[in-house]
Amino acid sequence: MTTTTDTPAAETAASRPLPRLPWNKHLLAIAVLAVLLVPLPLILPSAQASVAVRVLIFALMSIGWNMMSGFGGMFSFGHAAYFGIGAYTSAWLLVEHRVSPWIGMLAGMVMAAAFAALIGFLALRYKLRGAYFALATFAFAEMLRLWATNSDFVNRAVGYHVPLRSDSSWWWIQFEPASPNYFWIALALTVAALVISVQFVRSRAGQFTKAARDDEDAASAVGIPVMRYKLVTMALSAAITSVAGAFYVQYFLFIDPDLAFGSSVSIQAILPAVIGGVATIWGPVIGAVVMGPLNDVTATVLRNPPPALEFLQGRSGLDVIVYGTLLIIIVLLLPKGIYGTIRQRWSRR
Image (cartoon, rainbow, N blue to C red; front, side, top):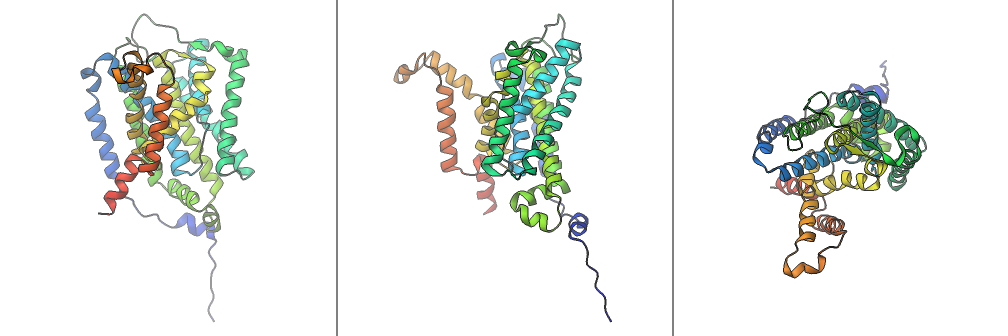
């Protein structure tokens, strides 16, 4: 007489070892890139160095968005909520209580992660998917914008001005305007976000999250706790995005509800990943490198257009037109983004 034992599906899925993916090459590439970029602010003029800092802010925001919407498959149109939480938490602690921005950055990460887990639980609990999930994230971001605009607790629509210090300080993240330290801090934060992204994707949580993204019903059928891993992904994504907000405040020394929670912030988080390649490690970085200089290029064209484009002089909104045109071209010609398409064609060889 033979007996059979039925292993629960959840135990089987959780105990099965995952294949070790060749992610070390990404970590090596990140290290090499970081070393190569360290002397960049010492070489560039101050104006171009400022553009480089903005590129890193865009990249940091997009890495956070890509973790949730690319690897997690939960399209967010409300990442301004997490950016704004990081910005306002850091600014409020600094201005009102004289707390170091580093501590404010950590507090913002905790607040953003908790908020993401809350709205994620509510959305997933009521089975919001696709466009409905995206609209829910937008609604929560808009709710925060309206609350900040009308709340005395965060200084209403006036926002916060970071008080200037008479001396440079790493502890207070405040230096001379042209200091390369801003670039180095932004670079360190972006490198850390890339490393976290790589480690997440290669981890069991990342693999289960991607499995749920590809087929949520099948993932649930084999015992993967889908909601748990989605909430972890959302919290991690929000924490990374909040760091961009906290650093933004220290670099520009000002924040208000529109700058923190406006829909344009969410768009700035989405576009680099879409242009570079959604659900890839390097897509957000490549997209940020493409997007970052566009503001300066379009501003230059508007100030001193060539003879053939004199009709553009003094007109506003050119940057939006360029963003829209570039996005249409990318979607039509490179549907997987720049890096995603190149990687796909290379793998076919």
